Length: 212
Ligand SMILES: [Zn+2]
Image 1 (spheres, rainbow, N blue to C red):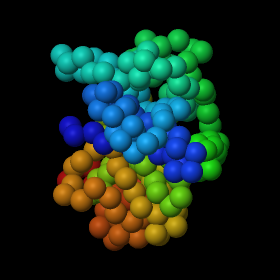
Image 2 (cartoon, rainbow, N blue to C red):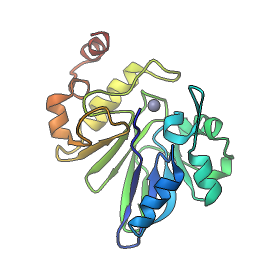
Image 3 (cartoon, rainbow, N blue to C red):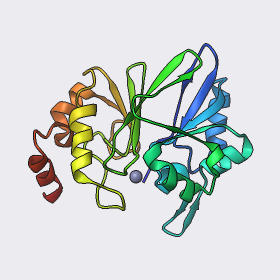
Image 4 (tube, helix red, strand yellow):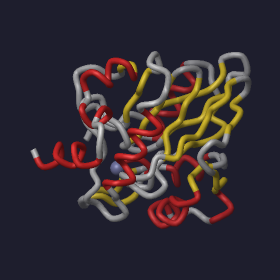
């Protein structure tokens, strides 16, 4: 499993947002404190419990609900993901800020662009800030997200990868949602050479990768 949880923010204002707070909320808060940062918001890539907390395979996973319970911060989700995240976390509608692809969020002096990348789930989103892309379960370093879970859609995921993430500047560094590879990050240029899911030229070619 080995999820990555990221803090993204502004050194000058010492504010940060947590991306996918789950598993150990105290450790996430401690990491922010150790960097002298204050958590002022929360960004959710998608509704699966390993990313936002809830029940999974008999485990109770801490997540967004515990973070917001300790300190009320806004939780940003794509419109298509609101229902799923609300159900999984048990939070109320007023805890959420509903956003769309292309929206830009200011965290102090840093600007985060939200990229709606449906496919793994309908409201999956990636976050682009200062040349860094946090890709959730849409793109891993040597693969991409599953499309066989509820709400998964292979045509949409192929389109999200081919028309959105593959078109980012080559020097963009991708930070995925899970540690499935020895490395923790890689550039888009590198992934276009090494990750066939990002580089598939057609839907048919892309779908063949799943069958192999
Ligand atoms: Zn997932």
